[in-house]
Image 1 (cartoon, rainbow, N blue to C red):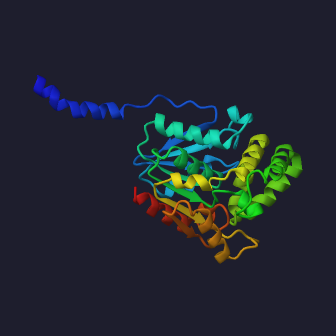
Image 2: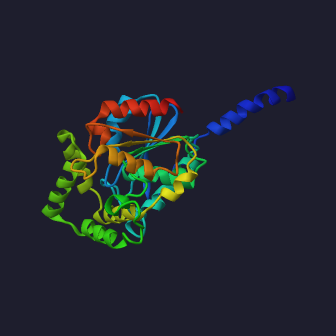
Length: 292
């Protein structure tokens, strides 16, 4: 019997590892889980819904997707995001989810603000991910507004104006402003109504606070803590004052502290790459995930 028990030890250990984790509870995020296979965490952007990933998930089966929904965005109650800071605490909650749900070295893919959150998790909890993909986001968004030498302190006044402008916008003025913003972010007209609806269904105060924080969050010094492979997909926004070559140099400079980063330009796309150029996006994501 002792011999049989000894033989059973590895199997018992496997069963213990496979034991389901306790239900995850958070007042900052909710997480949808779908599919089977290696773990992939998908994080949408500012005022966006988990639905932005639906077509991507359907096109790339074979993974267990953990799709984050930030509290306060697209009809999800604001919870703890209603007061105080949003971005860093949400990043910590995503890291807690990965750890407590026993995800084994997941890939983390984030769009826009989701890209910032992916970098926060990878830099501040470097033991958790296996690789990171950032979809059209700089490690310091404020550099877009004031140049690479700007400091978060110098941008505090601008951030405060942005916070107030988003938080206090109401009625038709809010809808018009949202539609104009989305028109510049989504090239594919058929997809714009969904993005507009998600934004209008988001809590203005949470969106305003998060956007203000994005402008003043400089992750460039922390990028050196990210040791796993990182891919950044980027586009040239419509009406951008920089050429493709100039913007490529800007991205290279911004990610210099993470020399393992692969910077990939995506043509024929605005900010929502997964909608505007799905063929290229899925090919890049498939290659990225296949290396897990």
